[in-house]
Image (cartoon, rainbow over all chains, first blue to last red; front, side, top):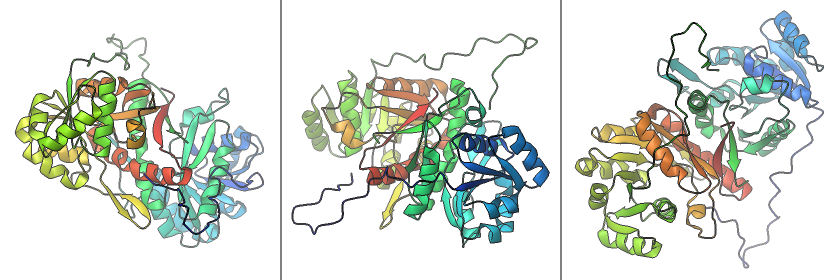
Length: 238
Length: 238
């Protein structure tokens, strides 16, 4: 238990900032690398539907434009490099297999950008899904290592692409755990998650604690199989 | 996404068992190794309050008896060996540092028992908590390796000892992720969790996916610090 009570004798400190007081992010352009995949397209759809300007990125501009056109809502498509260049916040939703190579090739375009890694390194066999352990500790820490000039955070790991993409569903009842080293960067990502009805963006630690958040998806896959569901995570008591 | 639809041509299978249909566990004796620690005592209190027969285990019988007397509710105290011997289900709530040695010394007493590991291997430094990676993969897998004749599961990782032990709190609004290799064993643990008002026991995968469940506590500690809360986890859409 962490006590935050100031004793009567303690020197006066500024009152703790309200953790739910988040910046206005409505004017930011959000790029989604790997935006033609299920997860990327689902996130792009929800963010655009919430009023965010979204650019889908893909290896080829044509595929991105086709996917963007299908989504509507003002979403644009571009190749990954242009997507990164034109965006303020760049969500990385590429398959784990292409993660390192994609980020390395975009190091210049991603310099100075707020990068949000949402990749889950998983393996699959007959017994189901299991966590892969990247050498750097997690996909997010790999991103941070490959992108020394970017502001790397991690978030949006536990969302069901099926729910995200279902236009009948108005609210996605789930919390988005946001990890990162710099509070202001995390708060932008938290605010972005909070724009999607039903979602809250919750600060959940530093990047060194990203591995377990990424790999919890293996457990959600087991839950989905047993309960025939699209499970998500809510944090209680906050 | 896992499709569970049987096609019209498929051979007829028995209908899938309702995952919420769980056994009656009200007659089982539950032991809590490390039952004088915060987590163990909190769990013992909640289970006893829900009507379960509980035996607190500790290294010395006297300490266990003193803690049991304080709890009341018919809780008994014993040394860890007697606690294990007399219980049907044995919850392991010892500190990570003593995990391997305690289990090794109880191998005989725990043979045939349903063991529920709830230990979170964490390290702490100036930046907060971080996951430790046991050689076996997780605390639960270490338990399984050390106790070849026991039925090892993992559960009860994300509970706040503060909430568990607060007698004013009637319901603990949280889900308990239960991991294990054998469905019948997991269902007993799920049913046990479900006896505590507000809790659900949810099957969440095999032991090889225990590490991320154990280490998610590091993230909950970050959440608690930022939001001044006692955070827990709820799974949505189930």
